Image 1 (spheres, rainbow, N blue to C red):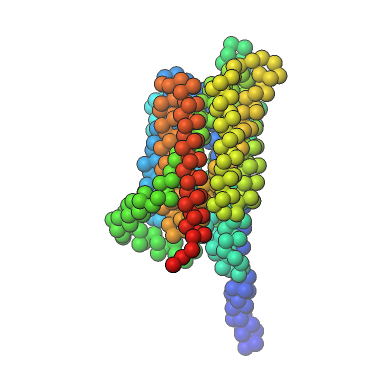
Image 2: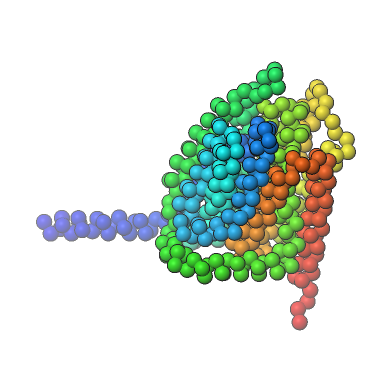
Length: 439
């Protein structure tokens, strides 16, 4: 009896020792996070592309997006505090509700539904993106520690999978749009209600999938308690981080690129879909053009990430993406008009591909640039990225209805020139400091 009892007592100990000897594999969580974001943003991204063409009465769609990104800008300043209080997993789940509510508001579009939904989505978007960065980084560091791997390699691998999946959301979402929407003979579009119902179902699946993420370990509860107790001191440290970065010459030289990255995204979502794609291909054609945009965006995101080795390579790659987009801006500005036939269909698709190349380059290279130059304060640096991006996007949505397409294109060309001058000067200064002899 004693031997049997001793074996029974040893069984849990053996199980515990096996659990310790078998380190957790966090790739499962990366797969879940990547798939959840793909589902949520394929629905939201496609819905956003349609805002300026579907909700045209009183510029409701355009102004709603302007309100959304103004709210996003403001809440980005304090999103990291909210994520610390909630924990990154809870912040991710709560953040999905904003996207669900925004798409639902499109079933009954009016000032009373779209404006509140846009304001709330600004808050939700700020915490879901801070939560994503926090969760993915923590998972990568834990995986590297448990499996005795190089941290940089794991972080790169995890981010590569996430951004590769995320970049494909435009392609998948807009193929769904293309399949569901139909242009009627009278110029109206049928199927929008069905499309938004489908998108609500897809976002719901993404939210359910997010619930299967494992919670953060060790420091999660402690940071939550600390954040709630030291609310004021955290706000003070956050404001110091922001002001310190704004006094850094390197950050000042990158800010024009932040702003341009927001401008070019808003131009595609608002002006390009409304002024170029819709007249040539109809509202249903927006899905096809943006699917092409998303496909080239995803391909170039992966390719640009693999080619990145340092600041000179980043400058070279960004310049290539900028040239691709400048070609589109000058083409529209100088010599483009809607034509019929094969060329009339082909031209918007070529433009969408070139714009997608530029966006894919900017997405990967801005993240790499901040990671290289601001290792001491990546949280503050990425907060600056979101603030300037979202502010620029909001400006486009607000001023878009009141200025001509030609004026907007001139703004884009000037913006990209200023951004390129800034990063070229930054590269020269950093390389000069790196190679100059030290006393």
